[in-house]
Image 1 (cartoon, rainbow, N blue to C red):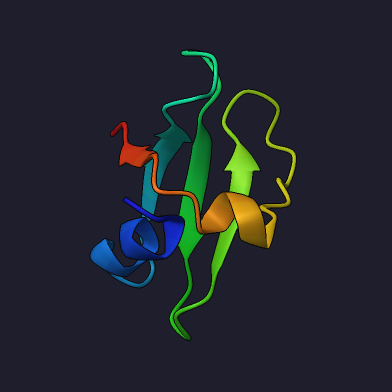
Image 2: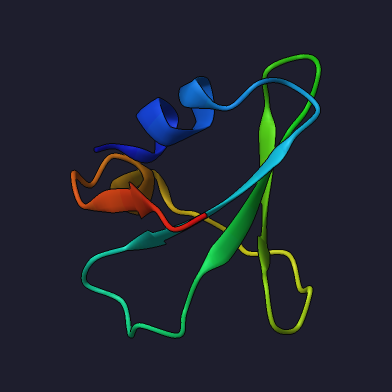
Length: 66
């Protein structure tokens, strides 16, 4: 699943935890979807904003964790 597909599946104003299958098990991001449809990604451990590259966003190995 691509990141855009993951983000489209969650309602605006909510959060979801996602990861790429190629990442270490403990590395997950929190996706916050805004009302305007854009989303922000943060590291769930540190709270730091995560920059998702276009190549990473278009990868087909994204999955919901929670």
